[in-house]
Length: 223
Image (cartoon, rainbow, N blue to C red; front, side, top):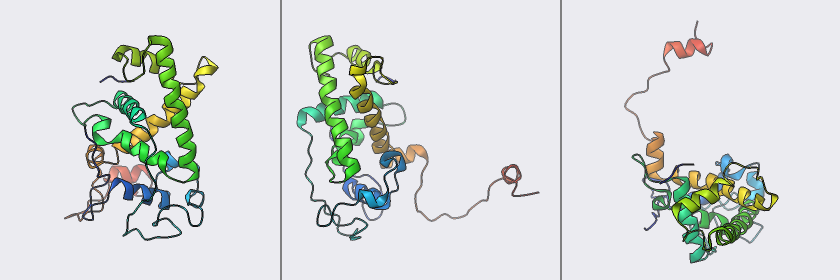
């Protein structure tokens, strides 16, 4: 694990100004984030009839990005999550810290969604946040976000690699694994993150060069 405010509202840069909430809806509707959604099918991610936002598969009004669900994490939980996200992906020469790209807000938005997979993640996140503060208090006499940096790293080292040596730490292991994945998703779906990946998106190109002949021959596509 590496060491190392306002969040940004935009998740994906486009001419249409796609917001983080709008992108979340599209992800849920299209099932385009398998690393986040796991084995859930798009059908299972739809809200029940009459529940959830317009713009899902059953109501494809993606031009009206109104999301009616409320954010559910407390300010104290968001403070802890903000610290944790920055410990997972701190600022470096290429990218700002995860919280500066709104990773903790993205996770709050994600676990607030009224879908089965997101509600399951909500339970993991809430349980893990409670576990993290309880473990920090037991070890260091303070909450996680108020602990010293070396204490925070010491605690995370017990849950970052899994499986846990102590069964009592299993909630922390599941929590850290989920937060790590969601933090990475949040960061690399921002304009800054996509630029870091070299992802240009759906933009016109002045020319297109085919793969080099050596690559085509390696793939058996050219003699």
